[in-house]
Length: 401
Image (cartoon, rainbow, N blue to C red; front, side):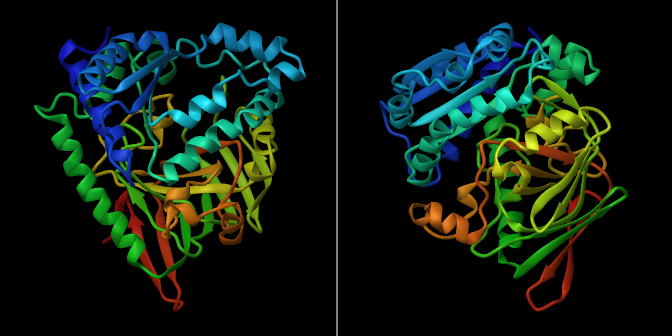
């Protein structure tokens, strides 16, 4: 166990705070149902969260994630009907849950490297209706979610760190060595939220992102806002929006490596034209990247544009976990885009009005995929305003506000 008992107790407090903070349009009440989904090796943290949820008088449903060996067998052995199968009661269960806390503690990050990505994609598409139920409930203020990771030998090894070094990065990133981590999170959230409001107030038409290997343009779109401190991820220092996918063009490059569906990729390069990926390549894992982009129509389009300020994030190492890597601080902060699904809560209007038709009209992307690809290079992000003027909003890892 890499974290101390005191750190675990504080981590549990942070996760419950995050779940409640993520509930934007409503408050939790006694006997709401919280789904605690965990890998078996995150048991110390899961147990601490479970006890605290019970004392707060929540109904708690606990499920353990499928072990890596089971997942490998499923994707290799299942036929088409089995890949498409949805267990009885899953739709009803998702429709009755008020919150989700998900704990990630993998024992093998490359277990699916010899599985055809198309099979993984087919299963993901089949289960998309489950995610859509939660999305709809979230828009109505009936549901929220949060997730985190728990240090394991596998994560540390893949990140090139010792177990202790990896755990120390988690403790620093989540403020677990602070006397009151929740108070620290409230302070950081206040600061990042102010930046999000500032960006949302600017009459931005497009963003132009330039770095050594990247020349990339994003169309913000109408009725968009920036979100920070949502509580949906711990840690989370990013300030993000879901742009109008139709205006994406140029070259995006991810210099930070990534593990996705048991596959390792490095140096992903995406070329966009008229909003869609027209060429996908990578230094390692190029075939996997191309198959992910082809998962469904929306997988070749972006659903998120995000920036992280290095002054807030204490993450300075590659963590072999997108949750941490997309919040990388380091020397120059980071920019990341996600190919695939957009976030409905970046819509400025009433969430219950953002139906499928309006999403299409406004250029919110829809996909079974959501894959964050991270660039940590020194970059300049210039906002082109609606009157044609330009304003540098991010440079050398910091927002210019």
